[in-house]
Image (tube, rainbow, N blue to C red):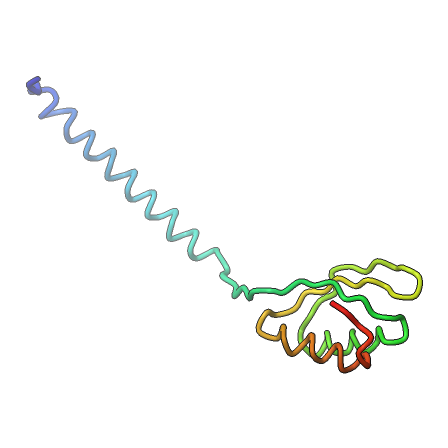
Length: 109
């Protein structure tokens, strides 16, 4: 199908202008989004459940604070409360070792 002279003379430049405006507006909004966004650094977190007698809970919280950990929740059971914690994955092996050491070997995860 051949293009008519109307397509070449009138509608061609209008189509080009429309696509140009769409491209410019899209570029503008994408750059505006980049100025408004605030990127943050995300670290991999390790989530575990720790069961420890009530007498040794303070040692677990002390170790958790030293390792930048967070308490996600606590299930109060008689005798041995279950604590759900999350902490940086890089400190996982050290954290679990320190928890067992601080609680005199009575905690489990």
